[in-house]
Structures are given as structure tokens and as C-alpha cells.
Image 1: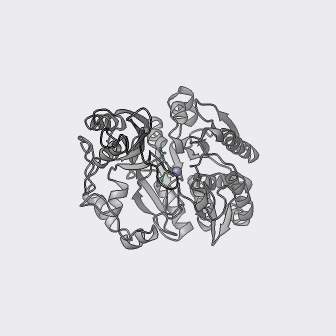
Image 2 (image 1 turned 180 degrees about the vertical axis):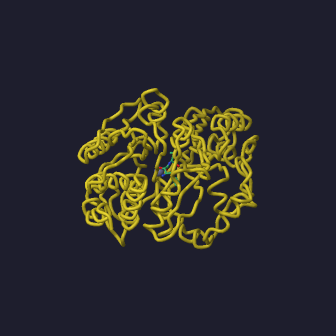
Image 3 (image 1 turned 90 degrees about the vertical axis):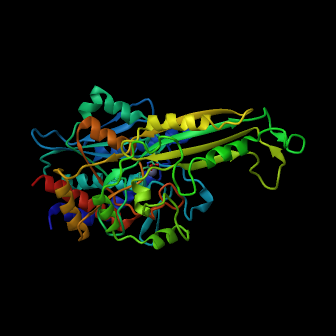
Amino acid sequence: MSLFETHILSQKEYFESKWFEILRIRSISAIEEYKPEILRAADWFRNYFCEIGLQSELIETAGYPLVYAETPEVLDAPVVLVYGHYDVQPPDPLELWKSPPFEPTMRDGNIYARGATDDKGQFLTHVFAVESLLKSGEKLPFQIKFIVEGEEESGGKGIECFLHSNEGKKKLACDCVVVSDTSMFGPGQPTITYGLRGIIAFELALTGPNRDLHSGTFGGSVFNPAMALAKILSQFIDEKGVVQIPGFYDNVIPLTLRERTQFAELDFDDNSFFEKIGLSQGFGETGFSTNERRWVRPTFDINGLTSGYQGNGSKTIIPSKASAKFTCRLVPDQEPNVIADAVRKFISLQIPLGITWELVVQHGASGMRLDLDNSKFVMPMSQALEKTFSRPPVFIREGGSIPIVAEFHRILDAEVLLVGWGQDDDALHSPNEKFSLASFHAGILASARFFAKLTQ
Ligand code: BES
Ligand code: ZN
């Protein structure tokens, strides 16, 4: 066993204690009042990078700061950039957490905390890997850069603006971007993800009367905005799960037979997949398998609905307002802006007389599909994964979005490697988010082995 492997195996408690430090910071990017915590998380990363001997700095943006760090430059050698995010989703509903979201707690081999897997734990595996290589005296004959952002979960544009600037292009220039913010296909099954969906997010607000009305006095004589909203939203997909926005599928690339076969050959059981989330069965576009529906087909989903009285008991009103937050997951070649225009038009044709409306497009990002056939980095990564998990990786696409990743690929002309250590049941964005300790430690080892391979 090499020195760095021995080092990693001897430092488990230390890595966990450092990870817990950052998990205790409530870096929720969606809620403005958490800004001090966001800044504390950015500082934590900067200080940690410095502590392990890297050059590190905070990069200010119009939103929350980026944290950048690098090992020394090496001429004529590859440069690897590791990307992650230090922000997390809001933890609510709080009452459903079995232990407090910002107090990392160990139960049955997992650490429960908001951000445990998405993405503090996953990102840190690479930091600890580099730290271990350096501490065990490995000379890195190539350069590693880290970039961590604080707006991934809230659609912020800070990192994108930086990436498009001359300074950003220079600083982030690299041959390969490594990202661990995805999942493994199953426990102990190493996975390389070669595609992600894009996204476009909206908020629609409808206004009827200028105040809530008595539904006895006014009911039957005015259009109820909650009813208008329900009618409009119900038009977006049909009973076969097909999105009804005209033009929505125009640029959707049909699935190749190769890909369909590859997905069908994966060891996947629909029944147990749905059972784990408390459903007797799934729902989606007719003619597509569950994995096709969640990885490579575009969607329309309501994320939040608000109108009228939500308290105990009943209140007989016609609400003045009704609003909904919704998103479409997009696949490669569907342009977020084009879809936004199509959605606006679709809604405009359905607004009842007497109702006013406002549609805000919140954020968008393109989907991507990586071509790994000619990749220089897939082989060393696959070898590192196989050595660590005693199985070769499977190659999948996933349905989530990591907005900046497609831009890295495009602007930096770099390869992208998405290697996640998470699981489908890690409860990302839900109460009781967790990350398996075994995956965390295996991730550190696999990452270090990948970096060590690049040196050979
Ligand atoms: N880690 C996720 C992305 C992800 C989730 C990839 C599941 C693959 C499988 C990431 O942090 C995330 O949640 N992104 C947001 C982006 C959005 C707010 C723009 C998402 O996908 O909802
Ligand atoms: Zn997330």
C-alpha cells in the first residue's frame, strides 16, 4: 500500500471532524438572512485550503463569493479543476428531521445533515485526497485547482459571470473538470455520469379582485384566481405525461438504440425504486422506462403552490391572489430561453378575462451530454474506481442539474468527469439528508488514486 493510502486510512476521524465543522454552518443560499452563514462557509473553505498549504482566495461576485485554491503550476502537465458548491438548500420542513439539520449526527453508518452529500461531503473528498497526497510527501507533477461556489442551489450567476471574464477564463483554465455532485447507481457501484438535464424555473402570479372577498357575497360572479391557476397548470401535461406546450419537444434529440440498450441493461427494479419513496407505482411519459423518464426526457413540474387560506378550519373567501413556482427539466438542445418564451405564450392564451398575471423567469441552465469516447481522463478514473470499489464503473445519465458544468465544458474546452459518491436515497433537498460514511471514505481514496494515476 502506498504512503498516501495508509495516510488516508489512518485519518478517518480527522476527515470526519473537519467535514462536521462545515456541516454546522447554515449556508442556505436561497434565504437572504443567511448571508452571514454563507460568508462564514466561504471563509471556512478558504482557511482550510490555506491550512493544507494551497494558495487560496475569495473571489467576489455580484452574488456570493467564490473560493479558489490551487497547487503550484507545473509546465507542460495537465491541469485538473475540481468544482463544488458550499451552499445548501433550505432544511424545512424542520419537524420532519429526526436530528437537527445543522448538527451532523451518525446513525446506521450514515451522517445526517443538510449538505452532508449535496455537496459539502462530496466536494471535500477531493480536498482531503489532495491534502493526503501532499502530507504523504507525493510531489504533484501536475496542477490541481479548486473552485467552490455559494449559489448553485439558488440559480445565482456569480460563477458564470466569473467564468466568462478574462480573469476567470485564465484562472479556471484546465484540461479536466472533476465534479462530485451526482449519485452512484447503487450502493458500492461506482458510477460515471455523462449527462445532466438542464432547467428553467418560473414563478406565475395571478391577481383577481383587489382584496380577498366573501365567497357568499361574491362567489359565482367573479373569476377565482386560484381556480384560474389550477386550470392553467392542469393544461401543462396530459394524462400520458406528455408536456403540452407547443414546440416543447422540437429540439429534443431522440434516444439512440445504444443508449436505450445500455440503460435497459442496468440492474434496476422499478418496484423497489418506487417502494422506497412510498409509492405503489410511478408515472411518466408513455413509451419510456423510468430511467429514461428521469434522465433523458424533459419535464414540467409544479414545485410550490400558494393561494387563499392555509390555516386551521375554514375561511369562506375568494382569494385575491394565487401563485405557483414551477420548473421544466430540459434535455440537451432544448434552449432555456426558447422554452421560456413558449411557456409565456402558452400561459398568455389561457388567462381568463378579469385576471391579471405576471410571469417571472427565475433562472435557467442548459442540459448536457458528454462524449466520453475519446476522453483522456476516463481510463485513470475508471481504474481508480475499480481499485476502490472492486467493480468497474457503470456509465449513466442523471436528471438533476449542475448549471455551471455545461459552461465549463463549453468555455474552458475541458473534459468533464462527473463522479458522484451519493445514493438515490440520500434525500437531497429533503428532510434527513444523509451521506454514507463508507462512501465518504471510499470517495477520498478513489479521488487520491485518480490523482496519483495522473502522475504515473
Ligand atoms: N447535486 C445536485 C444536482 C444533481 C441532483 C445531479 C441529482 C444529479 C442527480 C445539485 O446540487 C442541485 O440540486 N442542483 C439544482 C440546480 C438548480 C437549483 C438550478 C437542481 O438540480 O435542482
Ligand atoms: Zn442540490
